[in-house]
Image (tube, rainbow, N blue to C red; front, side):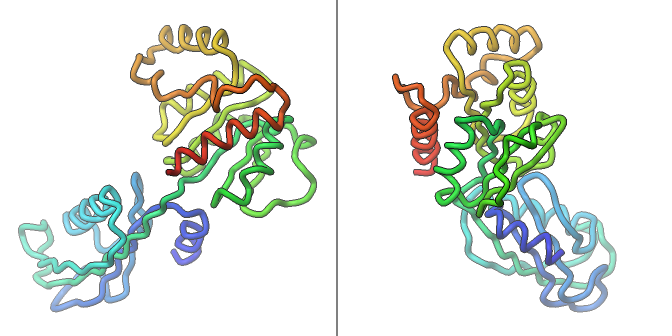
Length: 248
C-alpha cells in the first residue's frame, strides 16, 4: 500500500487516500485501515459492501471537482449501508489532485529522442516506449521510464489511463495498432505524427473497424503546431509547444 502510494505521488497520478480514523462499536475494519481510490480502480479495502461503494463515490466526486481539501465523513454501519455490524466509522479523505498527467511517447527515433530531451525537465513523468533496444540511450534520464516492449501497443493497458500520448514510431502499421488501443482507453490527449494523407487513410480504416466520428475527433493529427522545418529538433519543438499549451 505505502509503496504504491509513493509511486502514485511520484508519478503525479490523481487519487484519494481514505483512512478509518475512528470506530465506535463493531466494524469490518480497524482504525488506520486504508484504501486508495483512483479514477477507474481502487487499492486496498475499508470493509467492502455499500460502505466502500459510497466512500468510492465520494472520492470520485472529489477527483472530478479537483478539490484537494482533506475532509471527514461519518458512516453508520446499519441496514442503509447493507452492513449490519451496528457500529459507526469516521473516514478521512485525503485527495491528491495532479495538474499534470503523465506523457507516453511511442517511438525512440530521431524525433522521439529530441522530444524526450526537451520534455524531461518540464514533465513530471514520461514513459518512453519502443521495441528496439538500441534506440534508447544507455544512461538513465530523470523523470523518464524507458520501456522495451515486443508489443508496444499493449503497454497502454499498463500505464496511467489519463496520460497524454504521442505516437511517432518507425512503422505506420504499428502507429495504427497503438492508435486503436488509445481510442479504447481514457487518454487525455492523443497526438499522431504524420501527414494529412496518412490521417485520411487512418480515418477511413478506423471507421471501417467500428470507430465513429466522435472517436476520431480525439486524435490530433498532424500533431503539433504547423512547421515547415522538418528537421527532428524543429518537429520536436512544435510537439513540445503543443503539449505545454495543453497544461494551461
